[in-house]
Image 1 (cartoon, rainbow, N blue to C red):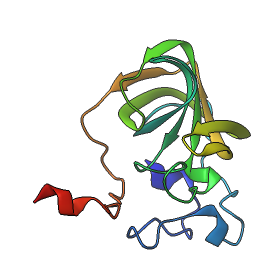
Image 2: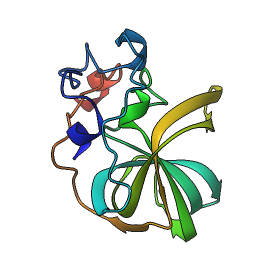
Image 3: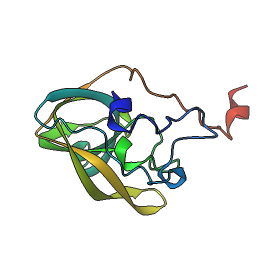
Length: 156
């Protein structure tokens, strides 16, 4: 679970107006809590492509909520996982809901993320390598952050 990756005293995101972001934490979210690199674990979240060729993804960031890193402030590194795949994964959309199974290890890593308004550097606190990825319908145990939609008047 995502809560196992951060220290118990670190708060989770509560609402859209107060998301858990690295800049607001005393240690900027660099304190890692998970240290069982020999165990095989499953973590569910949202995939944000880092290295891709069309719809084939070779590396992605796994984040706890949709919109993290590109449309909102960046979550702390202890809530971002870099996933490097042994074979490409076909991804239909950014923030696709996925389940990743493998060995999760602490690994502070910086990745360049190409988004519509430029390039940003994202620091992840954990890494999966050689992991298996599967599509899922929803992500349990995450905070659903509702984004304010400036176009909602068109839905009338």
